[in-house]
Image 1: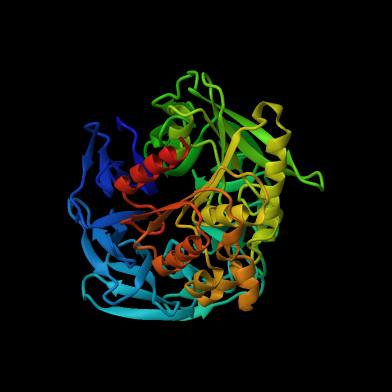
Image 2 (image 1 turned 90 degrees about the vertical axis):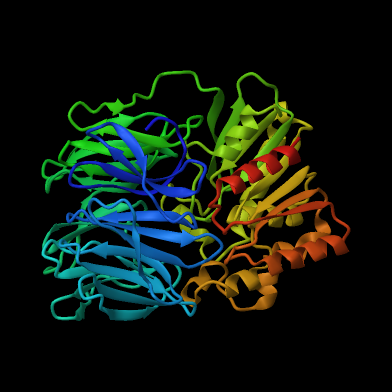
Length: 568
């Protein structure tokens, strides 16, 4: 395990309890195997043109990999048979973007979903022995496939309707029919978890409660039943057995692990430190959890958590963090709060404040290592970073997330106004320089706020931020477009676009644009740049050879370097 690097995706096991994970150790996201018997890490051979996105496994010891070719926007599915050191590409065999893949117990049948440029998802069955493929069904919009029922008869599928709304259906693979239900109505937003038995499915649901809640559905009954409530979002659940689970909650950006007996309805906290768990998986053979975990100043790494003594290895030592992080609450006019994390160096005074906005909008600043924030606060500049979880952020319930759906550029901008007012009220920050920036949606909101909010900004930063909502909305699948603004009125879309407020900008800008970005086009960004030139605004534009979601280590290093220099 050794050094800490960038991780992503699932952690999966083979039958010998070796685990596999995706890690970027400076050469892009590649596949690694940790051999538990011999206690060493091994990078498995993979095509260097590709970056691995996620892993899937089943009891047959067959591992599936989802990978993206550098410079392309089409993901593909690869298979790593038991004992092999090199994966083989298997799907799709056409110009479609693969989304997921699963296998049956034998490992001979693969089910995968892929979406084409028209937004049509195909769910296909591929036979590894006959090399024949057939389509189960087509859907206009995204589909998410869950794991097969224990006998392999039922395939659960979440089909998107409008925006983040979806409906749960079952595909009977023996009869080749779709099994619908009455309770799974439009508006459902769920995450599939596991089959408890052949006819009982558990899932996380955030439609009927304010927070993500665990439900159980007996497919022979009219409707599902609630397993239990939590005062926080339940982010992940793993089953120890049919009656005992471990679940992870997100409590103001901190991960807490609970052990729960479903019959006795009793909880026990088994892990609660100032850290964030990105992913976990259970190894029932060794009675352990494998975690991807990080702290504010320690990069994400792999940890083993024993379910016998509830200890983590390597231990999270009690040491004094070099960065001080404070939870703050910023008042709105209605007395509700904007939760935020305030990062400061412990040994330097503050000259500048950087408001750093997350993407999404349904994302969250948590107690995790963030390379940009860490570099700014621990570097040579005297910078404090304010990381707000504005309206629309995840982790605070459905009622906090939903107001931004279809309403970009309204309540979120108002929250930035409240944040600016709060900064002005802090006596220690009087006359300090204030910057604002972010990535993707955060970059959009930063540029829009600089153009709309009258304030003495010192600078703005956008990394792959949309500047023209007309163009941005057009590039989304049809059923996702209303997530941005629920109108096709171009004048309304322009009124919420940073492009329309260039003339009001009174500070320098740093704009970083990925050339391979399929969501925010280079043409759209260049249109914004031309408007900056026309209005004689101060800016720096830099192109990255990367995708919308930053994939390459070199790109991340460039972003950190450019932002650090800009804030000097």
